[in-house]
Amino acid sequence: MKKKLNQSFLITSLSVLILLLMVLLGILVFLETRRSANFQEYEISLGQDLLTWGSFDFYSHIDSTPQVTVEYLLPKNFNRAATPIVFYAPFGNAKNALTRPQLYQFAAAKNMLIFTVAFNYDQQRSLPEEQQRTAAESGWFEKIIEIQRIIEEKFALPHSKLFVFGDSAGAVMSQQMSVFLPEDIEAAAWLSASGVKPYSSIKHPPVLAMSTWGDYGWAATKNLVDNERRQGGYALFMTTPPSWAEKGFSCFHHGAHDIGYNMILEFFAGIAEQRQNNTPNPQLWPEKITDVNGTLPVPSAAFKELWFSYPHDAIRQHLSSRENSDKQLQTLSPAVADKIIFYTHPMAWDKELWPTDIMYFLFEHNKYPIVAPPQNSLLNNTWLTEKLNELFTLNGLPDLPITIIIGGDCAQQLPEALMQISPENRQRLNRIVLLNPPVEEVENLLSIPKIEIWSNDKKFSREVRENIFYRSEEGESFGHFYFNVLGDVIDVKP
Image (cartoon, rainbow, N blue to C red; front, side):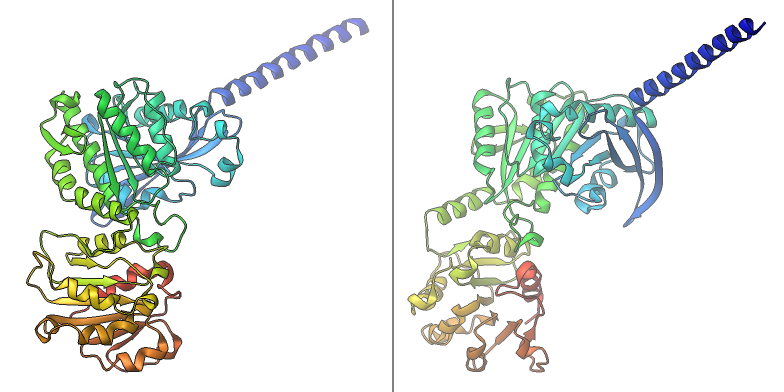
């Protein structure tokens, strides 16, 4: 009897053990095959746009990054039959990316579903290069397509090729996804990639490649596009302005200006429309542009109009002048301008502020900029006089009032320079603005008619004179907030 009980206990124990092993195996299989969990969704209003924001956890089963959060944004009343899906590859330390106006417009204005992945910046940069999400070897490119399919299943969307774009580290990821997964990508665009890889065939997705002027990846990106065009591949290149908010940071001539995001928005929207019209072949697209590499079809009239609203040729010439140390006055001519602004600043400011930066900022605010490239004014005491006289002899100078804006110690030459121009030309000056002039010179400079002093010296923090404007932004050139100050200056009515 005891022997039978022992046998029964052994059989029962084995059965329980086998059951536990099966349960454990089932759990392991579940964990291994589980792709997503913890879906959350909210209706949000961004301006007048009603959108759906959602997120979920994605299980990559990549050892270095086993779990990430995916965020997506789409119109509340989206068109299921015609909703392109866009992957935004974020820059290194991006946070809350889809709340940025440049990005949520993909959903709000163009009926697109845009998603991104919140990669951990510190974790990613600690990995070997081949394991970082920007490398094909990491396995993340295929995982992005897997995420796309999860989203398509959730919203019952037909599977289609993916639009990809990004900035900085995300630019590298976008470009290389289009290299290694060309069959899965509808089009690729990027802003300021630090490294690009050549395409193995001209049959790659259409490419819109952009780099901020001064960016260390500019030459490699331009060479990539030039080479693709020579071989017959579809690629456009554009040199873009910096992001004004980055001034004072090491990434000032790396961060992307809004016009770059707008270009991508119209590029993708046009291609999506051509896909709906069954004309995905770029050679059949309806509009054409001409750039330095020749003529190329573009997907929409809206993209063409935006492309030609930007002064490509003039920007190229001005940047070349900087490289060649050209000290001539430089200008851009907007379609509509309400005043001429003559601008200069000292050589000490030139490390952060290029003449091209100032010119484009004024240009996009409908001013007619004339910029004197910086020099050390203390070594040439007739320099400002020469430049002001040169201003009034420029060919084609519009008949508009003239504002002079001078930064730093260049202001010391102003009294003498004004005496050397004719009374008739002095009458055209409606404002003279000095940005952080030497404090010891201020009282003397205030005797100049139509003068304004904009200074962050605390001596003026309680100033009540109407022509002295105190600014609290620190730094000789107002630090990170320089363009806030300059924007306020040019918006002041004389």
